[in-house]
Each structure stands twice: as C-alpha cells, then as structure tokens.
Image (spheres, rainbow, N blue to C red):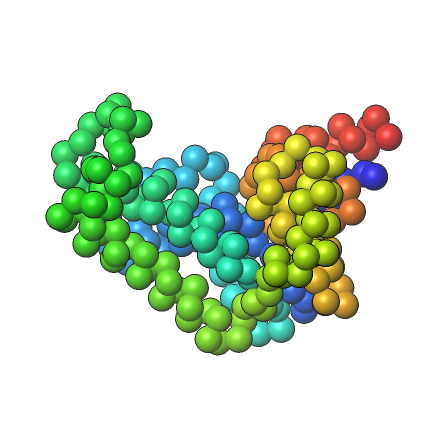
Length: 221
C-alpha cells in the first residue's frame, strides 16, 4: 500500500487529534529547556527542521479544538532519550568535558549517580514531567495505551510486529494506537524518523529522506 506521507508545510491544522512521535516532543522540550535554563552550551537536536516542528506543536497547543494523542510508552521514551541526549550532555560540558570525550561517558557513572549529576538529573526529569503533566491536566492530551494485560492484544502486537516495515517496536505500537484504539478517526502521526512509513496511516514530516521515500514510492507505483 502506498505510504501516506506528506510534508508538514502542506498541512492545514483541523479540529482533530494528532499524535506526535517522541522525536518531535524532544525538539519541543529542548526548545523549552534552553529557554528556561538559559544554557550557554550548544545542544543540537541533530535536525535542520527543529524550529518547524516546534512551531507546529505550539500551534496545536494554542488551538483549543485540537487534541494530541499520548501514551505512557511515549513518556518513557521521551524521558529516557531527553536525559541521555540533552540533559547529560549539558551537565558534562558545563563540568568541563570535551565534546570529543562525550561518547565515552557512562550515564550512571558520570552523570546520574554522581553527587552533582544526580541533582541535575532530577531537575531535568522534573522539568519534563511538569511540562507534560500540565498538558495532561489541561485536557489537551488524549491519554491512551495498548492493553498488554489483554492476552489476545499482546499476542496480536508481537505476532504482527514481525511482518511490519523496518521499524522498532515502539514505532509499531504508536502506529497501532493511531490507526485505531477505540477512536472514530485514525490519528495522523508527526515524525522526523526516516524509518517510519506504514502504508495505511497518514504521516506528516519535514524529513527530506522520508518525503523522498514517499515520492519514489509514487513513481514506482
């Protein structure tokens, strides 16, 4: 089935529910993090399109007719990635580490379990929790989850993941949530992940590789 991948620049926001992949939340939270803590450390997201995603999220949150799908699995992925990719990097650079040595750093030994690093870690987790928690309390996030306590659903997910496109298991779970988890209308998914391409789900992106994949698929089809 032909991928339904579209450029985020072409999207007209409608009164519906959207699902933001973890990388999009990371871009948005990094922008807030740098503004709140006025870090002088350069924390690159690795994407040339971070501002475009941040602007899109801000527009969604400002529109009271729009909701954002959310799941505890996503919270876990966002927190784990943020503290390792951004918070730890910020702490180590501010502590005098050289950029070239960062790859050698141990998350536990050099950051989370150190006297000062542990405080920085807790502050970073609190920052993420406070922000996401405020959106949940406002009713703007539609919290849902896949029921792994249901034996049939768990078996379905594990079995069907084997035949899914090249993707990780979290992405596959997000795909299933967006496609139909009790809601009347499938949720479009916003991502910067080049590997995310399921043929029967709307995917919005600014990633040129993912957009090129969609164009090549149309030509070959």
